[in-house]
Length: 128
Image 1: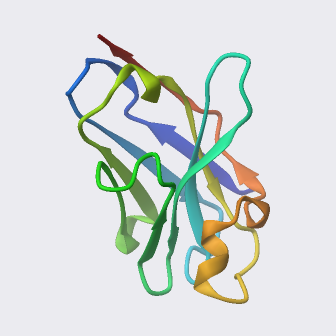
Image 2: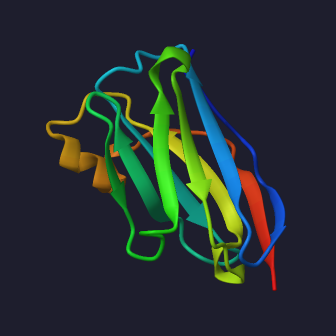
C-alpha cells in the first residue's frame, strides 16, 4: 500500500534552519506532485510548497518564498523541505502529501486540490 512518511521536525530558535524529509513507498513516484502543507493549532491546513517529480519544477506559497526550498532525490523517491530563517509563525504540524495520479500540468502541483495521499505529519516549533 502507498505510504508517505515525514521526518525531520523538531524545535529550533528563530533564525534557525530545519530540513524535513518525505519518503514515498508503494507508489509510482515519477510524474506526480509531491508537496508540503502545514497546520497550526486551530488553523486550516495551508499549502506551503510543491514539486513536480517529472521535471523538478517547484512552487511556493508567498509566505515561505525565498526561505524554503523543496527538492527531490529520485533514486530514493524522497522529497525534502529545507527551511531557513525560521520564525515563530512557521511553527506548525508539517504534512507531506502526494498526488495519486499524474497532474495534467506541472502547475497543478501548486494547487492543494491535487494532493490526496497524506503523511502523519511532523511537528516544527520555532521559539523566539
